Length: 217
Ligand code: AMP
Image (cartoon, rainbow, N blue to C red):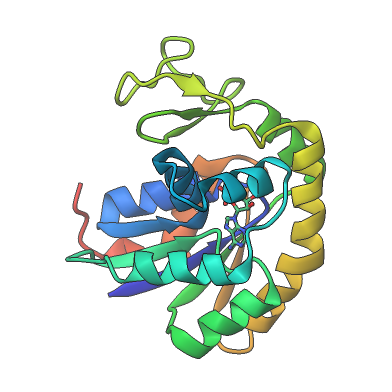
């Protein structure tokens, strides 16, 4: 089983890179952000609390996040591996990972802040299958409608400028040091994604030796 963590500031394309790898190689995509958005939709007892934190650009408390990660990892079924996306985001979460899980490599996506702010403001998400679009660079064929499932495209409630800037500042303050901590145990590989996701994907596959794996699709 191949085990990866993908990191990068929000809007760097972690979801897109993960989905391309998972669709091709049969890995499971474990995205803490997606799991929280599902939790919010399920209207569970903690849904309201999570929703308020996320919409204000704040992080969800570590105990709740670790629980969600454990749940994701316990449901791997017959996947050929997993990509953990959105976790860890701070040193405490990185330490949880180091203490509990073996990882083949940490994939770090790098992009300048200004580029990512512009990208996030034009980001849209399918309300059904969660596919990501960029209305400037990767628009759907029919405006507002998902190419894959016909679902309605929406803007994430936390994708407004103030929340975006806060998340970027949090990334530099908390997640960058977490990457340094991860590098004490795991292989860390950095990729420049300024030119877009499809340019970086083959470099990631090559670097991680994935081209030799059997493709499922
Ligand atoms: P994402 O889809 O990864 O951008 O995550 C959306 C939001 O979920 C983040 O802005 C956080 O509020 C929350 N979240 C996701 N992963 C984590 C995490 N590892 N630690 C704390 N909060 C998280």
